[in-house]
Image (cartoon, rainbow, N blue to C red; front, top):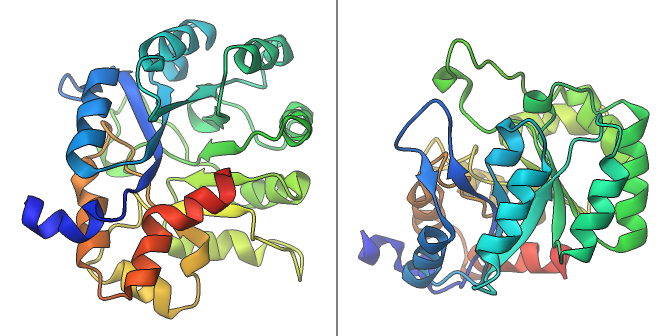
Length: 267
């Protein structure tokens, strides 16, 4: 396996989407900060954007975010991305606290927190992040729809809501996680003519099939749109890494997808 992944390992990739904590419906889906550190060692990762699963499913987001900051503090490669719920009354205070705690970005999980991206508070949050110079991460989904527990159904973020959010965000760096490339095409169709997407990245964990998907992405001229994201431990990180390692693409495109595009967006 390591021999097959060598072209990926050489890139010192940035992982845009990863989690620590326990997934509530599957016992084997869990990871600690030490697991992500070991993953960074093994696969030569430069940095990992990390959120806490407890902030997805807990009664509040603060408890999971507190654990996130505490657990990632020992390894500078683990970049804390706090999860906030803008539908909660005190989201602005939570944002202020997260900034003071050293957050590297904010993640939204609208399908799990059960709100629309069209509510005014999401636009207000985007405006604050623009002022602060922090990227916005939006998880359109966290699981393949076929794997969801029948009592834990979460709807993927609608395409028209993602498009409207991007209109509101302007030049704010935005990472959209959990979309297929053809789903991004649906979002892009809903944007105004001439809308610039240079500050948007689609992470690749949900676009890791069929086998030639990444090569097709590069041939279509959308290489600058995408970047590596594993969604570990909810997904197996090696799946997308192997796709990047084995894709029939140029070395420069592989470097951009593994690291360069993420570094360009995140700074």
